[in-house]
Image (cartoon, rainbow, N blue to C red; front, side, top):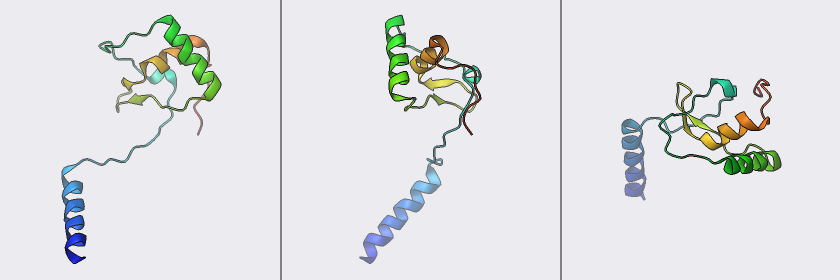
Length: 96
């Protein structure tokens, strides 16, 4: 029992010192503040963008767009395009 606890404790302390914080936060941003990556390898057809917009309209915006600290989109270009082009986003301020 003691060894198990000590090993677990040693593992936790070594992980904490060598890894950056793994705490994620959700921050609401205006869509105009987000910058798509021009080197994004995925291309979305108009049909895909329309389907993404329909999904957001039906089920809500459940998967956030992942951005870096400068507002560059890392993941979620299709959702960004769907919101930008479909009229779902009307320039309102994000929720508090």
